[in-house]
Amino acid sequence: MSEPAAATCTSCGDAGVLLERVHRIYLTWPEDGGPAVERVVDEPELWCAVCRTQYPHEVR
Ligand SMILES: [Zn+2]
Image (cartoon, rainbow, N blue to C red):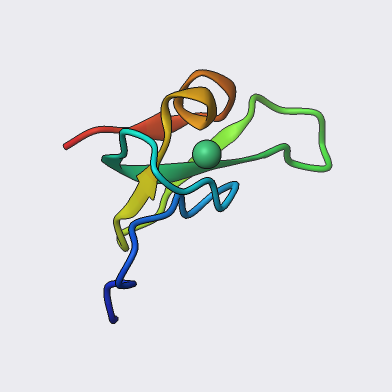
């Protein structure tokens, strides 16, 4: 994993914004209609404030 020279949001690609290290959470819904299952991505991403309000994630 290599860090980009200029920090950009991993999710939307915005540059020059305040970024925070988060772990994205993927929500999947089983075909049987059960409750959503959360899967937390191990690899950290850098997200801007907008993405952090719009998408599920975890801060460790
Ligand atoms: Zn973003």
